[in-house]
Image (cartoon, rainbow, N blue to C red; front, side, top):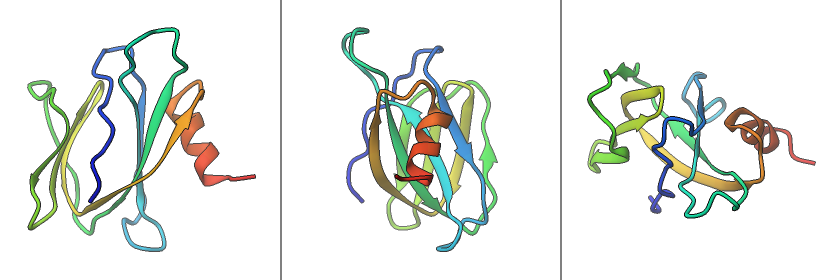
Length: 115
């Protein structure tokens, strides 16, 4: 598993989660805004595939760590982003960085509908 880009944890940062079956044919998709040092830099989003046969465990507001692997042997992840906090078990794969999208959902649409 390659290292994931550092998420933007500001409350204005955008993210989205597309929950599907979680298998090879229909993986889940996580998109989150990447931290930027200067506001003049275009918005940038990380697009990640998630394969998981398990239900998500939704978390409260007490976690604000970002995207963290809690246990590599069983693929235990804690995703804690603005307005989106859950734990899951499965495999995450960084797909690509999407530059200049207006929102996380637009970034996901760009990846799912290539030219």
